[in-house]
Length: 140
Image (tube, rainbow, N blue to C red):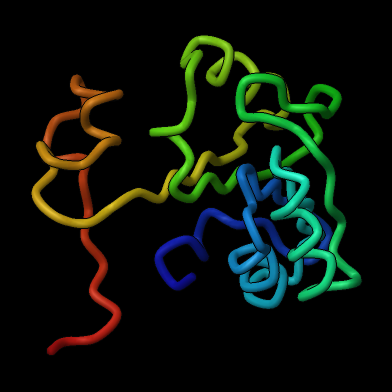
């Protein structure tokens, strides 16, 4: 959350947790930023767990390729471990552009390791290894 913090809105903003799974990051994003977080998850089973774990969460069904929100709905989109599941990257990109407000931020979280081995690098090779940043939560 510390690495994402500068890109998250304050309490009056909105964040989309795209591919929210069981809500692990939805809750953390809301607590860290104070913003309204909306979880979007295609799996009904995952949404059910999210509702059980976080009964007050805003949760909707939807996919990364067909984000079910109007234009300019969010100040930030958080997509953790999502890109490698996306089958239609142009539709994903168009949907992100549609739901993000002007000057909004897309925060993509992927795996760790050398940039060339990250799934994210495979989808965005022009960004190169310099674009990959590692954040270490603790040292061994």
